[in-house]
Length: 129
Image (cartoon, rainbow, N blue to C red; front, side):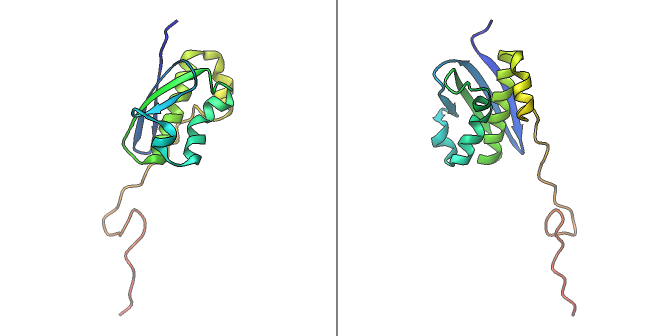
């Protein structure tokens, strides 16, 4: 058995690479403590959710690098990466992760802007003159 386990997560335009190893429960993203990096408590809960579902909060240490997208997208990408790395660590965790919906990649992306429109779907304001 290896010491480190790897998982990749993606959400919107963000990509996260996650490494898990047995440890004290510390989570670092891009070399910073995850609470400091994310800044919002709701995103901290989101990142911890796969660990909380399996009650493994203090059994593994996590190191992640996230790039692209914004804070919310990066948090979602790290969450998926953690779930995939946990699955690589122990395949018996699959039912718990699957029932929580942690192994499903959120497919929603920003729709491209179309010509003749202000945004993807919104047209220009119409003035009858």
